[in-house]
Image (cartoon, rainbow, N blue to C red; front, top):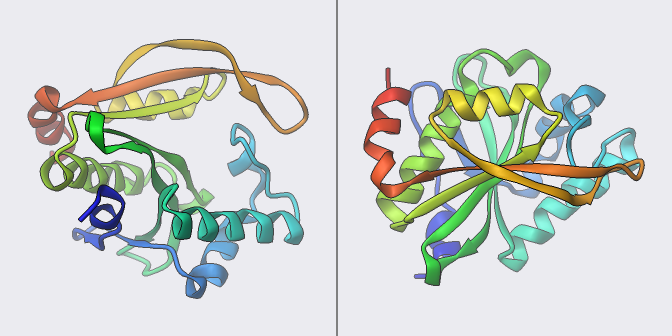
Length: 193
């Protein structure tokens, strides 16, 4: 099996459940995705129903084409969809992938949902897929995401200046982070506490 096939798994612990996105997830995701604050540093913006439809349809299309594995994150306490995270830029020959396209609804931020979802994604990447490197990137202006990545044990590697366009035309400086296989035991122990 290829990484894309193996990556598309159902992952769960007592805090969160992650499953590959399907059409049946549209309404649950819509319920949390219509908050404009989510999209402030995102490379696409959901401002209205048309924007949500385009966003959700792109998630489905990317997954179908094997460009990403898009996970719906469910909070086990409430049983509600909390947001989404993805595996992307999977280069099996180099044993590296990116965890990104991550967002959570307002009620799920600061609750541990991000930490436990990232734990499951990292565990799956290193222990089942055999990744040597898992990378993350975020907008240099997104202090909350940067703090979150440091909090899970990712190492800041540097900034790629003028990396891409953002909605509205601003050029984003992208800050890269990573966790390496040799670091995973320490990161895992930290996340599990």
